[in-house]
Image 1 (cartoon, helix red, strand yellow):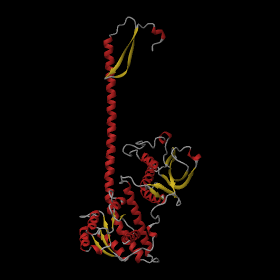
Image 2 (tube, rainbow, N blue to C red):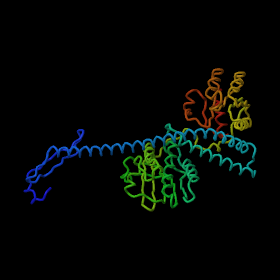
Image 3 (cartoon, one colour):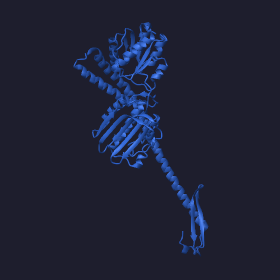
Image 4 (cartoon, rainbow, N blue to C red):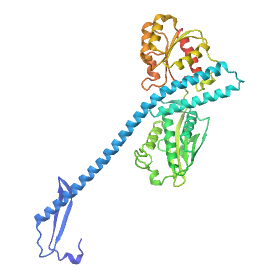
Length: 460
């Protein structure tokens, strides 16, 4: 606006709207002094030119944003495809590695259970072999955590043993500059949970903590305990009810976060890392998983001193349908005198399992080719009491072998053991008539108990 002392010198004010393609950008107003003539048509043309320029700039900015969004989506697609490839590779590795572990565990348990006396000095070394093999089995399960794309079934579980094993895995992956300490209570109650998702939650939180300490090193703490939340404790929780909770806490001594960053950490695609260093999905995925379990997560941080994430999962009084005792505690091993047809394309695995079954008293016909196994069964279908078969084999698969023997002798119990199968679950296997579905590597204890249960059931 002109100063008041100048306004009386004006003759008129002229305004022209700036528009382009039905888009109005504003109005240009000029004040015309006395004795000055303005070409209105020229003024309107200037306004149109300005509107066109603004329109072009706006369109160019939109195209720029579209290109950025396209690049971001392409990057996400490449990441998804990479994770799909990693998942496929992990499944293949798991299948082969579990077969190898089955041989190691089978032969070691054969010695432990049947040949090495309790007082033998060799026994401690044998126990170390079995302990290392069980850690390797856990490592395979961690690999498969990232290859599973289907929703897992939630069930009542004790999370302390699972978290302890996951911490062992995390410890082996941390640089030497980062120390890890844990305090995990053994008497925590059960929660309704998907163990795979709980592992993902802990792995994501610890990965973020490790990144915060990447430059300077520091201390990572994982704590698990029981806690009781009453009404006064729930003032800052919108989605929790009074009751008993399992509390999982991950604390680091890293760089910490400012309040504005802390407010956004659970937003999808928000990340403080550089380009190519992260998807920004980690904490938002954690937040979603915790909510799916009926829990809540709290984040606290002080810049320069570190961060703490606390997860609260409601405990349950429900009971598990299966035994929660380790298989190694089931003694003595049940045996029998029935005839078992054993089929697997891994010769070393066949020898290990066959040796265990023979020591349990069974008669065993072992085959490494499914076609030969079917021929043996067709020749003497009444001679066999149980079929144990691998799932993935050249020629006839385990499922195809199952259908073939059922056509010859309907009702004979068939158990499938597999190193890895993404498509066939235990529920699906039982649904098509299989007697049992057990993932490898199989403990001698579990194998003996399952075989005896199936054989006893078949004669009832």
